[in-house]
Image 1: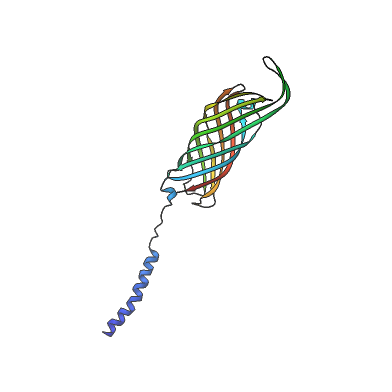
Image 2: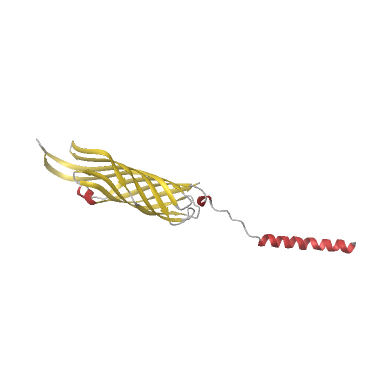
Length: 219
């Protein structure tokens, strides 16, 4: 009996050691990030400069430093997104004092040209890396309408045309987060925009908007 008890006592630590080895060698279970399993969200706010293109340069040929962009995206696990995009774009150019002849009067004035656009776009984008990646380059297309306000001032006189027009806005860019699954990051984008607005010198407003700002993703 003593021999049996001794064998049992010796067998306990051996069994525990084997069980521990089996546990250590067992495959580890890893859970996929929620960013790649569910629909998640991303919001971005940008500041940018707009370079006029096409016939818009016949009206204002200066780079605009007054541009803001806001975007909200629904990020799908298949690396594409749908979103809403808006912002504020303002361009101004002042000409030297000249004499202008109108129908019944002559005016000596400083001419100030302004163009304001507030787009409202639906977007679709494809990302080249998964939704949880730290670096996410993408291509994007956008379409919708823009509120356009064209106003030329000659002193107190003004020529104004304001209405809504269709708009398209393809873009490329990248989002850079500090780490994988990080929330706060940087968003850099180059966007070509065309608004189907025709008045006086402008035959479709076109510009290249270069912008950068903060982005945040969550689930």
